[in-house]
Length: 426
Image 1 (tube, rainbow, N blue to C red):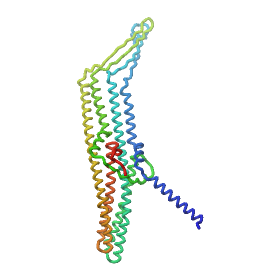
Image 2: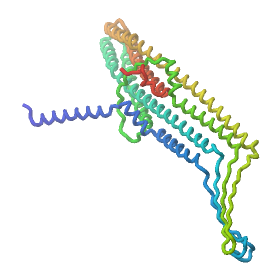
Image 3: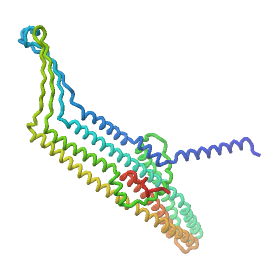
Image 4: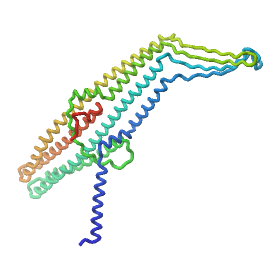
């Protein structure tokens, strides 16, 4: 019969298992949640948002009129006494003036500021895409580190098995001590690799924490295994999507529009601005008050050293913006081709490892174990085939991660490629 103590022990055990399971579940990293957190809290994104906000505030400033000017003063006749109301020329003066730019200049300045803000907004979109890609790459690298530890643990039993066999054969006088030492050395090397991957996990967690904007938190936890993404989009389609959707190209085009506006504005500077001034003269007593209204314009007399070089400067900036757009297109196309090549190469290697090398080497390992147990094979052959099998399994998951990282980078370059027809998870 169960006692109260037994029931309590079972209850405590059940609660412990439940809590451990809940904790493990809570600590599992979710990629989409990390991306959302990064887009919300990444310091670079927040700083760029403030930069865009500042650019938007410059738009109403650029189209505003210059501040009006107010002047007041007194005019006296002679230096011996205050002659206001006694002499005709003695008077108080009040003046107001307002400068007006030549028609079209204010609209052009507003347009330039608008284009600058739109360019920054496009670059902000690019920064968010790059940040999301960075989070994904770190996530995949973190997953790979954990996966490598799993592989080492899964194959550790085989290395223990060869160690036991060498010890048994050595005890029976059928093997040399060198074989025992060799097997034990390989076992310790596995433990060394495992510790190196644990250190890498800490480093990757620190970088991931910085990217998503977290400071002091407990360990992030283990990433969930990424789903394999079926990628059927062709290279030509990816290049076309990049040309249409890339935020960097959009930003460069906005820069060209702004540079074009700057050229038009520089040419408009050949036309003068004008200033309207109204003055009131207060003379009191028997002298009548007076008023005046005047207009002044600036004369672009030194256009050879001012307006003309300004136009040439604006044209040079326009040419620069156009060349930067072409350079950006070439760099984007090169990045797409590079990542596309990496993606397809990873797919071929994964197929080679999964359907060819790993099954074959698994069979070789079993044959080597059987041969060593019967004395037909040396220990070094078994150990070599074990290491080869572990290497191929590691390389398979390396290529899996490199493929996913290439898709993440392609999505950052083209904006929305991962959600396009031809890309799905399974």
